[in-house]
Length: 403
Ligand SMILES: [Mn+2]
Image (cartoon, rainbow, N blue to C red; front, side, top):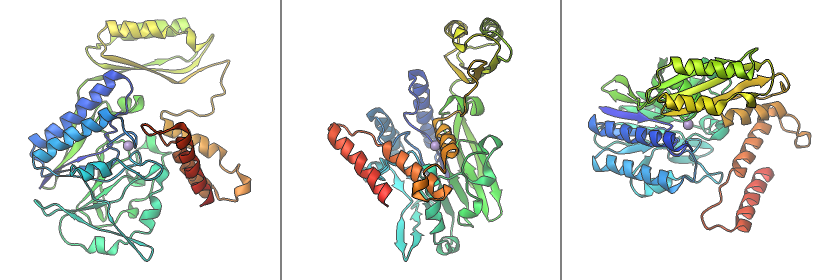
């Protein structure tokens, strides 16, 4: 049996055209390799799209590539991830499933408060696949608590469990702050655990749970991911052997400038030196500026000239990051984080406990705030009138508050 395990594609995540193109090419390459390597089937463990209502071009790309798999006789099994749901619980995966391009394996029924998952049988290999969807703010934890495990664990045959949740035992140091659940959350005794959500490349076997895998994204989704992962990829399972299929379309070069106790002119000079010293042929260049500068303002650093020089030296694309750069005048940055989600979480944690009138414990309050933020994240639908859109947002909000 040979299958591919892809996760966190986040189609449409990059705004910069050059990086968006690379992420598109990486997805196309992943699908091409699944076909070339004659995979029996493909698993996509959530977050195929970056937003629940993806732009037409992302949808078209997904349809084209999934169709390619289908035409090659390779079925695709999937679960929804935290980015796949609109606040009202809708997901584009339903549309893809209706078109017979994917099969959502997170299905079952609720029976006396217990959640019973069903297996989806892969006709060619006999593999039995099931899984649990992922939601923002780890709201899926409740589903796991209600999950009926016995039948899942006793089922015979080759079994795969797909999940979109951070597992504490698999977290790396830099993800220490991320919400996670212990591996015991997952039912035991499966042959492969196809993970998503955590953008790291990791495989592990922990007692009762063998082949727990996070393949990471097909292409990094942010500055931090480009810096940490360098490239993307996916996993290939081949008769019990696991292999990471690296997709490296461009090299990533990182230049970190230590700005501590330097003036803007010295920092500019230092950046020039570093760029001239490095070989940038066609690479994505990540420029990180960190530290507290001695005098003046950060805007006095000649960023434009630095970026121009890097382009002249052959960089394919230049990104700068100043999130760890501070000045003496303004040292009051309270929240330091690399991603929007991290910022949201940190701000939320800092302010939890302030809505005294609601009499909620911190966990309940965090959950309420997460739900409200999701509801405020509703996108206006094509052709929808402003008034209807507002009414829809208001209805979602009051539904949550009155629940
Ligand atoms: Mn993701």
